[in-house]
Image (cartoon, rainbow, N blue to C red):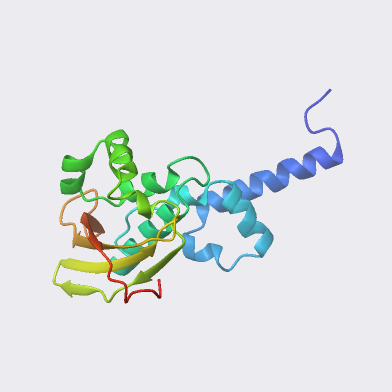
Length: 182
């Protein structure tokens, strides 16, 4: 049987090729303007794979990307959220916490485990001084507990991440009972 000899097979091949081309060519901001069906197709093809440091991302977006990725850690595959978070770890951070396999183990440890598949997040005000920034995040963990994390970021000065905001450290802190809103 000759490939694509049937009209339906040809149609599916064209649609699939078109979706792959759109996924490859369009920037993340363009995807929000596409019809829902094409957005869903993009999601099925691994939308998370494009999440990487970019000079256009301000520090608060970098924190949100990581928190949202960790909140959906096992989609589309186990530890996908941790992989995204590792992409946003600064080179100095990676020297201490990397390679990726070691970073994954670290995030699965008790200090960071509440970040994985959490049920809610509340973001504190971003504090920025020059090329350094910090932001607190309060999370409601999977088991209903509340925990806080302080993200410290810096704008990178060298290639390949020049002008990208990246995470230098994340420190856990305990949340008082008066933070029930998370």
